[in-house]
Length: 640
Image (tube, rainbow, N blue to C red; front, side, top):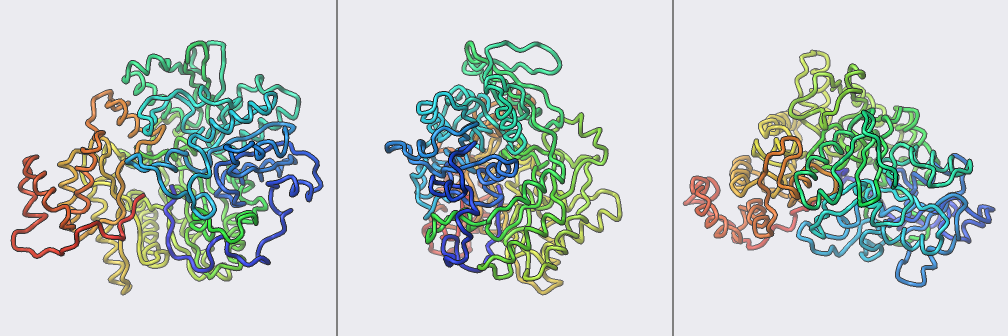
């Protein structure tokens, strides 16, 4: 997930003056009227999305639509169709010549709709006005079922985060049960998982050439149904059947290790899972995109604006990224609670400097741009142009993280290309300052390689980041203080955060800056006990931190932490792991974030005595100290 900075001046999305919008013909059509303005009488592909249509490279449906359009196909988009009326949104373009595409949007719908406490959210960042209720739960299932009923002979391709992360059996936190592959619950012909440009182009080409959808079963990054059992050979991994996993959580844990490893392999194997008489076949991921390939995707003629149909309405997700630029895909961090590598892969695909600068110039030309780029980053801010020194070793590697338990010796961690990119971005006319809003991996930039030149460049990166690219507050993610919890999270020891914090303060002092370092923390992560949270409270208090950026762990499909939460077993060791799953246990952990609030003092005192940690009482509540009288959480506490 991108964590964007706050420095961004100008009008909010949807409030641009009318003359700022390009003509309707500059967008992919969302209505028959717009289709006819383009001189078309029919379309080849219709994309249905749970998100509003923002013609920007950060929004998946816009990317897929533009990529297909660039290959000569006529593409229409139906954003947030009404599934509760007479279904006119689903009928309006009729049957496309090639296929329907369906996506829940840029987020899993259940993450979008519900909190960690399983309470319904009251807003939706990907909907005009931020209103909730514009999409159903599990839109992939709902949309595909409607389309199959209306157009039984037209292929339906499912994509996006929801379909991608649910391509095999997975734990659903909101229903508290193991669900089968999404293919067994929805009426899609197949799933395109991960970043879909190459996959959808190949499917369109083969359908255009006259192949039937049921013949297309070997495209990379697809999941398909099969009635033919797999062959037991080196090219295939046969997972435990779904019915076995329902009865045996250890089998589910064993499956996950294969799924994660193959998601992070350059040359992966085909995965198979049985559901009664049906097999779900998951073809391997494509190798990482080349620079030329990723440039072609980002260099397409996006308007970078919401569709004019939303004039006067604010789209919060667009507001966050409208003056930002993404510079790479992929993340080799491998955090246990993150889905980035399962969707984008762990290998980095970086854009060329020329492509990035072209987009920066486009942002600088926007009428509401006031000179401040809110983010020049990616899934992680500082992995641009990094990868293995010896790629032949990477081709054999199945490690889910290049940073944990230690930084891989084969990893090139030189930040020089990123520094050069920052300098080029800052030299673009109209750019006053570029901020880095994505999460910075300080364990990467602080790593001592032994190469004097690389270590010098990385120290320079840290200093330039702090001096030139922070909008007053730099957000980083130590996540916890406990060594055992951090090890399960695949995060570095908390001492490295202390080292970075000291460096941050030295740089601020030397340059006479008054900036803040804002750490993110998680409670109730697998392996975390109440005692660990009590120690976190004591350690962060000693550092004079009043925590703002906090989150209760939320299990999401296809992460290591979620598998441990559900099975109680670590998939790589098959050893049991304690996890707080009861709401009372989770609340008991979360309260330690707010040790400084009098409303929690009595409860924390009682709990520390109960767990035998009276030694922490004097650290948190010195007997002769005076305390504020506030009786509720501070208003500036942020949830992630």
